[in-house]
Length: 497
Image (cartoon, rainbow, N blue to C red; front, side):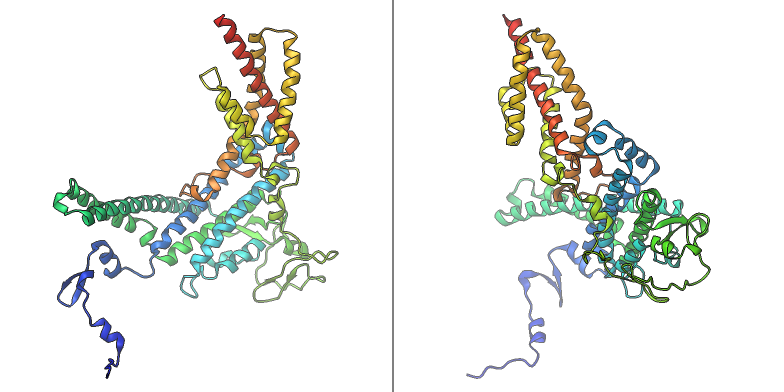
């Protein structure tokens, strides 16, 4: 047998026609899906965002949230929360430590956003800023980035303009995501109908097909309005500039309490300049009256005698190596990781903060319920939510209070007294419990929606709460609530008699 093979197999295959995959108009196949045809062959610019719009939208949402969290009003609110009874009693009364914790969490969020921007910037044209943004951001955090070279900095008018634009993109991209989900559901229903019955025999098929066409048009419009149809280089630049502005604002707000942040000093044209604190320590002769460094030209920077974790050249990039502990020879942990690490005696270190928060929230719900009688099954469920040690503490205290209360006092008076105790504890413990639940919800994978509102800070939660103090407060709350239920039940029994 002789097999004749074409000299160019690809040309032979491309010359074949597959009519079942679409209808033909002459030599040009027409796809069945008109929307995809318009997208794929309608001259769409390959430099547009496309499917990357959704990751960029989430990053923009995080940047807008950080910007709002750094406003004067929000910073004042956080300072007020730090002085609240619950945070001061369970977490810390050290305002400086709490501010360092707040700063560390914001920088951690900004680092994640900057990493996403760097991934997007890697797709930018070579030589166009912010290509290699990861290197620029590392220099920025050290205070050695040349922000004026790109016209960067922190002018209120420019920052607000960028935030307003990003907020608009977040809203339109969120609407696009919802519209595409609805379109996918509609097309799936249409496909099921057309596959099982003849179209003319299906009730409502024509109406469904009409809605599908309308939804496709809405998706097309939203793609033009949202990040989907925007130029990748410009989107990356907008986000990179916002990262720089937010970091400068972080340094301005928290620099007094975090010595590892670059120093924010007034610069040219109303902008803020970042100065490396390493540079300030090495060269105090270059500091001005405001504590900042200035120079009319390049600085000749001799390397420090012991290296100090830095290798500095007179020209070219600054190469940074991890700082070492000279005594132990180990890497020194960055300040951010130190601040965010839970102490061993905190609820967060033991993974108990969310469980205890749910217990407190459930007690509050039952205590404020319009129904006076709390079913025994609900109380049993609440009891078995607790760890064994806490259950034992609650049982022991209940037995002691039962013996004391049985010696005298009317049930109605006892119920009223215990009710006041429940309300007093919930007044300062319940807000922390709700913030703990919200903090976890905001950071869970399922809840990562495009929401640019300021997020709950970890200092507001039970994560850094002292375990012994928190458990003592929860035991007192549960004992008081159990006594309310017990004596309220006694009052109702007396009334029935």
